[in-house]
Amino acid sequence: MIDPKLLRTNPDAIRRSQTARGESAELVDELIAADEARRSSIAAFESLRAEQKSIGKDVAKATGDAKTELLARTKQLAGDVKAAQAACDAAETKFDELMKSLPNLVFDDVPLGGEDDFKVLETVGAPRDFAAEGIAVKDHLELGEALGAIDMERGAKVSGARFYFLTGVGARLEFALTNLAVNKAIEWGFTPILPPALVKPSAMDGTGFLGQAAQDVYYLPADDLYLVGTSEVALAAYHSGEIMDAATLPRHYVGYSPCFRREAGSYGKDTRGIFRVHWFDKVEMFVYCAPEQAHAEHQKLLGFEKDFISALEIPFQVLEVAAGDLGLSAARKYDCYGWVPSQGKYREITSTSNCTEFQARRLGVRMRESGEVRSVATLNGTLCAMTRMIICLLENHQQADGSVRVPAALRPYLGMDVIVNPTPSS
Image (cartoon, rainbow, N blue to C red; front, top):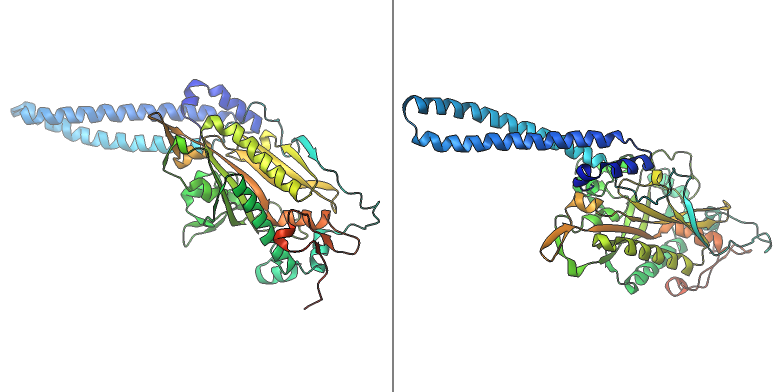
């Protein structure tokens, strides 16, 4: 949620942001009208309440006809105050609903356009020339099945399309990646957290995932709980309704959780293997900081992601996402796209977003500094989305005999230098 004061002081900034996102700037005019109606209804209610209190004192002193008239006015005021309260509540509700539908303000220098209008900021590493090595590239599923690491058939049998089993060395790969990621995050000063994967509507709504992303969320109506699509949700709500001492900021957390996504609208896309699935596990970084620290913290998160991908020896690109492709909460977002040899292109493997004060306002997370209380900023960053990182590892480090070389950074956690074909089993 943005600062309501901006509606009165700088509505053009909000209009520019809406236009950059490809959203309606008319929403700003609706909000201004709703804000005026809300403040007008509050003023009317308070005026009637003041008169009601004043007459209450006069009734005690009055006698005769004067008292009769005052009592009649008191009765009328009771009805007027009740109606004014209802009008006030309705105006507040309308304003809040409109405010929740308004996305975060995009920074002015974010690239314009939609999904395909990102800006490539950096290319790190170079894809292998498999042809020069005499290797016919296999995709991650062919490699994973041969190595006894991925079982899509039984995943579909047990849970349906876009589900899978990681088996044998596939399961060990996830454990190794998790430990490497968490240990690196601890070295960088993050506090590890295992958050719940089920959250209340207030947490999901507070982080902005019941807006444009609502169609991808799993909901359990019998319990009024949501399955998270990222541990960002629980980590953002961790300090909801709290006021933190500014001296304790920034706070850095790293969470590990399962992530559940319907992938609505993606039918027919990336159906082979484990690239686009309904469930995967992820190590996620999350930061609470003073708003003026947010830019520097965002650059740090991107740096950590680059460090981790580089440690796994995966060629990648750093992209700045265009305004029209940003989620509801992000003011700026960077993606890292890893090279996928079987597809001959870079695909998204991590992202990091600066959500400024947007989520904190919705969740009531504030800081106190020198007696002043104000909202904090929140940021998030993927350190390791398991399925996509496993895809990149298998494909980029495959060898002619079907084995897969293990990057040096991962060897202490996986306990092997090379992943080889196991003895066939049923």
